[in-house]
Image (cartoon, rainbow, N blue to C red; front, side, top):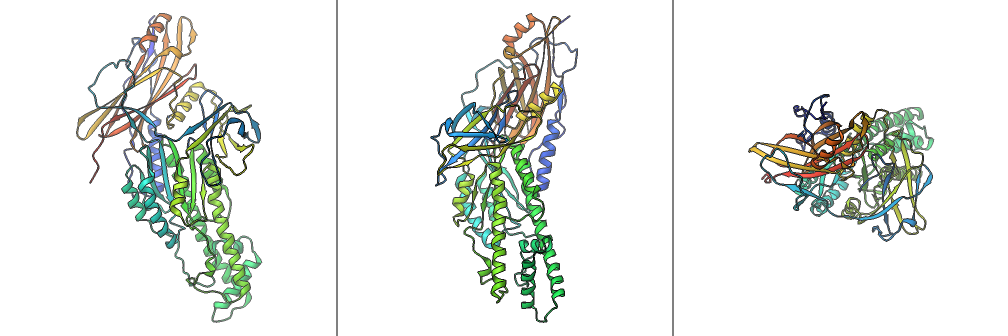
Length: 603
């Protein structure tokens, strides 16, 4: 018998890859394509053939809540701010209390992190080599995208005046807000004028300058009676007598021909239905755009922030859509912050530009109460989404530039609280988390309100697949196994490029299952490629079946096991991320390497 290290045979690259998206594509199409292509590429597996003989040295993923593979340890990032909104960095472990589903938890790990750039080794184009030697990481480093900030402008609900002010503020904000490791994107609830993640500030500013109101239905300010979305909901869904009588009185006041009470109620109900239908449609589109934006960011490797710029909106029916967005964001590790673009709010009933103003003081008072309630509820919806995902909410200020800066800025201090949940079941269910201060007078605590337990599969192979694919879209570098990654970039001609990745695995920390005279284990290696703006390109997954006698295992400890993965790409610079996970010990290692060459800016 011979020792066996079953290694992958060469197979074609994934049939589909993501090389970019049209900046003018509607949001739903962009998100759908990105998710579909990412999942298609990740689904490609290259499995070693059983019984294939090979020599012992063959060539062959604001941090959000995280759950470490193989260890029941939940990490909760927390930001504490004073009355002025500044992050506080002098608290200690004993100042915090942490609850999981209402039960007090013991904090097992505690640290304070300060914001800063993240770098990884940069590799220049090189000549091919069959077997890379084990070398120390290159000394030169290059900043890679580590934070992704998407600005979602609610152009469906924004008025022209509000949009004009936010365009000016956002243009100034984008001129100085993005750091070397940041990538920005411009999304809109209408899906018009989308710019995907980029480091090009000019492109982002131009997209902001092109923003304009895109209401779902024309708003006729001279129409009488003027029925708001909130009042329409009271009339149609709740048959609210004051709302109905107010609309009837306003209708009678502006109609030239008096109407009977019954006819007036019928017309008011008809008009309210029109307003309600248009409002519900606009809300569904806005929430759908937010859901799509969160899903789009799920395949980005790094900190993910979504900035909602909106006057707020109402939800007439079920609030399940809001809960779904919050839970999707938590699962996707996206923090949603919001800016109420209305600034210092004033009652539009006292605006001279509004068409008909009812002379009846009781009608005017009732309408004012409706408008005030609508404004408050609309703000509460976006505030709820922000609070639920651990983000910030800025309102009641005309200084929109400061608002953008506050909600988009990475906090200077972040407390990392880790705990091991008692009696945690790996069932993928949602757990609510609450973090409080023992003496929090004058301080506010920002932390998302939950996490999802990891999935547990009865089949250990399926569990390993799940763990690897969960890790690929994280920026964390984990070193539970000794692994060397050497990535090289080649440029056969001006239009094509190739990335060759050699992953050398040293089995020092591998746990083996003893069967007869063999040491057995299975190692899963997923190599993935991202562009310099953090967009997922493609991935290849390989599985190595290890079946070695003791002598061969000792030899392999020194030389390691090398796997080669090739990627055909366009010329440019890329981030290579390799995830290695073994079956028996359930240990995980991830490494990031930058390869390629910078491309000249398009004029």
